[in-house]
Image (cartoon, rainbow, N blue to C red; front, side, top):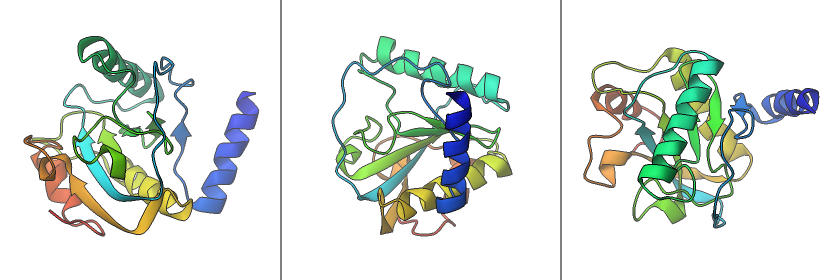
Length: 182
């Protein structure tokens, strides 16, 4: 079964330019207690940071993804992790709610966006180049697969809510990315 997952991931990368996406089951995530379908393609991509510890290996990133999910489900009372995807500084993308499920990451935007959160705090430092490349590749992948409109609008969480998220350093970077609009 793991070989099949690896082969499908490689096929996706070849055909859609997708980054490595670690499935929720592969990082040890809990099953969602509920889900609502997300109408795709969405018009927005919202960038976040988890504001916790950073990670730089599959083991530490999987642990941090579990920590975020536990926080969202246990402390916040949500039925799943809030983000559609998380990005580790190991250059991998970690599946949250995925492409097809409505996220809980940006009030007023959940039904029209994909929420991508960088694992860590990016107020005083920037994410690694591999993390930044993985996020940009994920967005391109979403466009090529029809989950994100080609004329999408990219925003930082602070552009749609009262927060400092995704951190000052990361926010400076995404302002230079394609389709950014405050």
